[in-house]
Image (cartoon, rainbow, N blue to C red; front, side, top):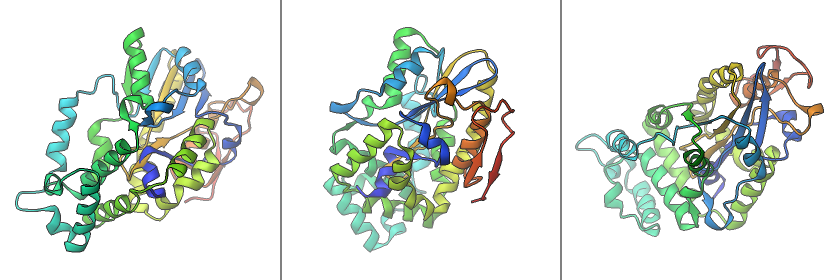
Length: 326
């Protein structure tokens, strides 16, 4: 798949100078009473290469609670399917062919046929929903397994050891960002998805290698270009969601319990799940404090192109200097 497709599996926010400290896709923020671990998540992993980086094991073992983008520990599959049926359906009397026009419809129909999805089954769905479904099918065809994704593996651990789970948003908040896109933006999203459905195995492996090592600079190069060219998609799927999530992360820092968070930006073209590292820790001497959360998150949320916090500062979360508004 093309770079656009890569965002569905993994997307990231730029971390500026913090990225140089990361050696895995797991970061930590020290609060007044606890540590919050933030991890870049991949929704689907190849079945033959699904072992999580060791940073996940250490963070999970040290945490008393798992917080995800969606609380998959409590998500009812029937409820999720019902939401999709209700919100992805086109109004009565409207068809995908009628919305897209013959040329676009022919391209989407051909792509669906290659993936074994009869276009008749998609013809009553909104363009954003068709894009999501085609992207998921492509990854399944390439050997990616949703049951081996980061969240699913960690949720299985919580079932075994009784750790509580929570979510940063609801299914409606997450997919509602796509549902709310204007009709033209939904069609553009579908165009990008179809165009990116033949990503080379080499490109996918490059993305996964960068994720495993926490190489935010490489991920930025691989994944950020199309987001910047599509601000109507970037704002609701990245900027606005990060702004909603940040106060919850700050609240976790004030709680008395260690917490692991896997954060993902879902639902764009095929690789749009997320990597939202907030601070990097490699040793006690280089551990950013809680102030760095505002630093990195401001960049991630599109509030600034660069921020700086002294590495050993003990300032409150809001004490950060940001510049270069985006």
